[in-house]
Amino acid sequence: MTADVRPVVVLVGPPGAGKSTVAALLAESLGVEVRDTDTDIETATGTPIADLFVTHGEAHFRALEVDAVATALGEHRGVLALGGGAVMRDETQAALRGHTVVFLDVGLAEAASRVGLSSARPLLLGNVRSQMKALLDSRRPTYEAVATHVISTDGRTPTEVAEEILTLL
Ligand code: S3P
Image 1 (spheres, protein in one colour):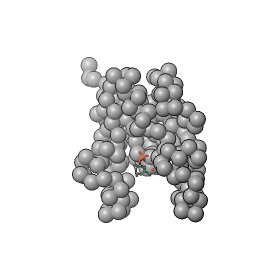
Image 2: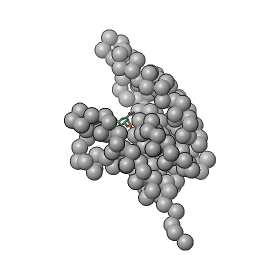
Image 3: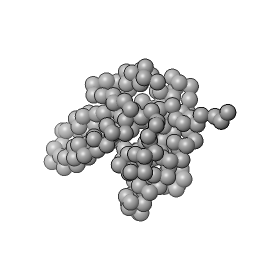
């Protein structure tokens, strides 16, 4: 019999959803390893994601990301966190079929605060918050479409979120 190498659970959601923190808590409870496609790409290229965007452009990063997700889905038996935009690629949507995928949902206020966009400086950060709102709104249908479970993280600690996910597995 061949070993089951699929992830126990795949976490998706926008920046600020808490994917990395929840992934670490889940992995600890389940006694498995965490894998994160952003980290995989940074390790493979030796370059921080932000620098990849600047030097090679987003399209180049997205192509690397499609491959990183496919590889991780095929070989990681643990908790897998995807970069926030990974699900927007058709190849990744197809690759996620049949997996246990949890969408960590988050509203604009909490997502912005978790990524350090305080509402205290509207002139400086208001535009970025608008972009973040547009990003959350445009991606939500796709997160919902790929997810087998949707969990709201608003007003909840990562531990509470992780505990709810554990009841689903
Ligand atoms: C991105 C989210 C980031 C990272 C990259 C692009 C996005 O990951 O993959 O900066 O498009 O939402 P996190 O969701 O872990 O911040």
